[in-house]
Image 1: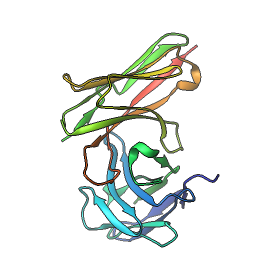
Image 2: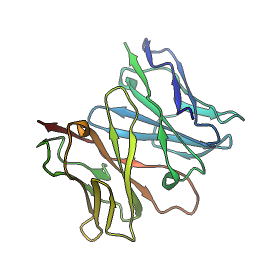
Image 3: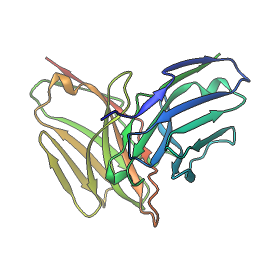
Image 4: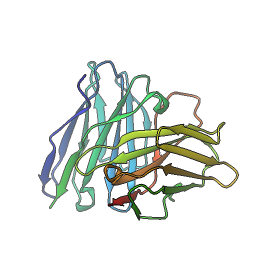
Length: 114
Length: 115
């Protein structure tokens, strides 16, 4: 079966712009979580969506937002981009939303802010 | 505040030998621990996990040990193979009344298995 698909793979944006990243989970998976990976910081939890509702949120400013559609696909939006937002953004999907049940990551979107 | 710490950014091991990757945590509310492996340009891949009610879990060449009193876990890979060369992340989940899947990750250890 198809894995978690993230688009685009690479993105270059200018400071102040906004960006939207997309994640298509594994078919049947209803939970989608987003993580930011930067050098030296590991993976930092952004938020989780389950059945179109944000169920959990990490410690990121309000410029970071997301949503989930009825088909479980999710989008993440970052407004007023800053240089520090340059990172690999990873999406993970799971069946019931519990990490114990299996949490599959996509390959990520590499965002560079210049 | 880094609640999950991997203090060794890198580790080099000879093929056939044992690789030991370490992870320390500070949050007593963590009840489930996972190891992920990541190759460049790919997302992390789940490797092995352990519940806080156990102290050891094995899966083939991979064994995870949990020492709750020391808030320490380790991943043993025996024997190490060149294909094991990757970045390994330790992750932990808090006890939660709901089913949210937030994981707290360490900063990773880059393992290089040499011939």
